[in-house]
Length: 202
Image 1 (cartoon, rainbow, N blue to C red):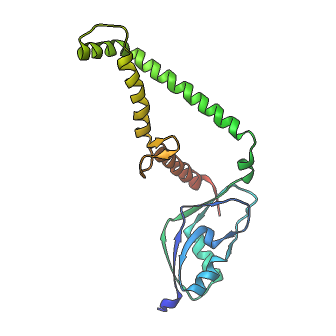
Image 2: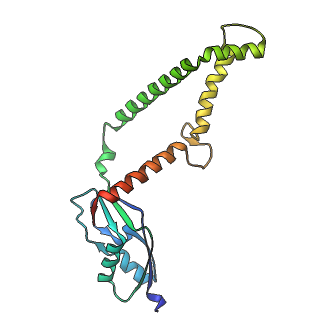
Image 3: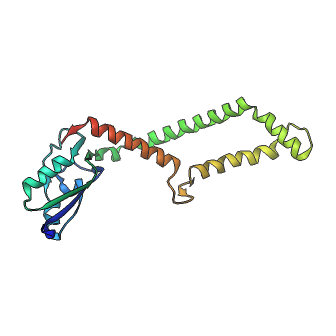
């Protein structure tokens, strides 16, 4: 075996292309090989119709066949993913002039929804009576003026949400992914898997 002709190919899980341009092999996979062979492989244009679909799933078998047709006398070793999802992103989306309006609308709806959820929760558990009981236990006084309890409690809700979501305004508390980022990641993985199973095969 000629070790200088050995090529290790690792398909990417997903390739996101910002414009509809020819798809190069380097877009689809990470390549480890002797420098000259690597350069030749990375510049190969994979034959797919970039005008028809926004998402195309390409199998490792198709990539191997393509490489074997174009480059001879190499020892090809494939590791990693069995399919790569190619997604073409419409750059016009980023120029949408109404985007900020939609963001504000979504934030407003989420804000109202959060308020409603908290109010309904407090109503269900009769939080006022709970605060009265806590105040009586701490001070020994029975009263309806509960600001001494309610103000720290309200601030605590905000602080607790910041800790839970690992954010204070636009800064992370630590380097761990937030629950929201994890949910988005899980959701995106599910979407990508569905698209791979149902999209056009390249």
